Image (cartoon, rainbow over all chains, first blue to last red; front, side):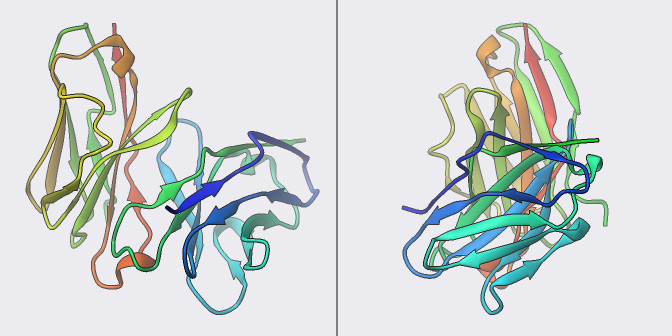
Amino acid sequence: AQSVAQPEDQVNVAEGNPLTVKCTYSVSGNPYLFWYVQYPNRGLQFLLKYITGDNLVKGSYGFEAEFNKSQTSFHLKKPSALVSDSALYFCAVRDPGSGNTPLVFGKGTRLSVIA
Amino acid sequence: DAGVIQSPRHEVTEMGQEVTLRCKPISGHNSLFWYRQTMMRGLELLIYFNNNVPIDDSGMPEDRFSAKMPNASFSTLKIQPSEPRDSAVYFCASSRPGQGPVNEQFFGPGTRLTVL
């Protein structure tokens, strides 16, 4: 069965510092991996995805994520955090052999960027 | 593109009442997903449809919950009778056909349901 784990419920970062939100996955074969962000009282917004190719994926709002097959990880990163990045972040996975099935989401990590 | 549209945005009702949540997916999308989000359980998949056909409803918590998709542009999630523990934010999402697993899901703004 496919799954993702987000080991941190909460991440606190000072504004201007680099941020990392961690995600590890479990899936048979090569995974399709996604990151979403949820701002207060809003729906989830797509940030980026890894399908194949370059292990470093760039997405919206200056975010990027690095796919590491040996560590089964897909950590979300940003070189310089903004207060406006404070939100709930979800990692998700889909087995490539599963067709257009629902994404499997992690429990989410709350990011707080402190001015 | 208007995005996924959900209505109502907020619903407050009393225990025992019927609640109907509505969703209009993005035009051209052929997969639709209903999720529920609570502090305790996080984001839970309730049911999803492909081409208007329910594929997996194993996430529907009880028989009190039902979902329909009568056509490609409309879906409903009904709770009858509602209970206080149903209080949550309900999200609808859709995704487009074609490349299948590579497609991301687009989420609506959600319906915040409070059952008193």
